[in-house]
Image 1 (spheres, rainbow, N blue to C red):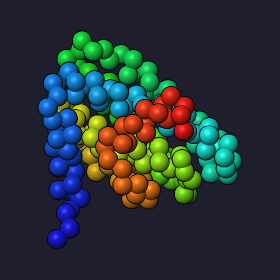
Image 2 (image 1 turned 30 degrees about the horizontal axis):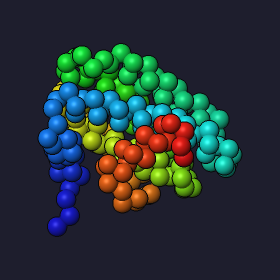
Image 3 (image 1 turned 180 degrees about the horizontal axis):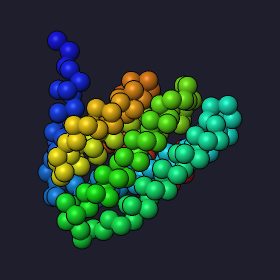
Image 4 (image 1 turned 90 degrees about the vertical axis):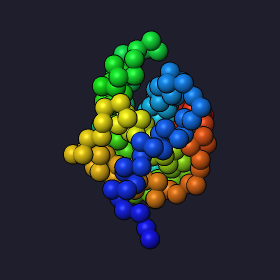
Length: 181
């Protein structure tokens, strides 16, 4: 019996909690912020490199759109401090997560992207549901947007099917965020 999309989406918050087992609330929040920052920076770094490797893959308008979302996400993430309560940080995290999903949606519309950039995209697609699940534990799931938001990460994960673990995805994004592709 294959799981339904609704069952998978309802389990997402549990995955976020399970991935952070044994950590304090502050450690979990810090990891979520780090994952968001790394995913945004890694994708932002990858876009010009993808365009340089194959100028036909990403139009200038898509590149601009992605960089706009990335700048917006970085801007809202700078408002999150380590001393904030998680519920106070939730609106900024939610906005940054929405920007990450918008970037992934833009990249999902692009034909097959070659490695190593596809691995960065796959890593971001793997981290996105965990971040979304964590935010849902703070704010409650948004039935109107949850299925729509999950579409791009799910599609990208299926397309690039890297088989990496969450820890490997986080390491990949951290390296790519530093420009190590």
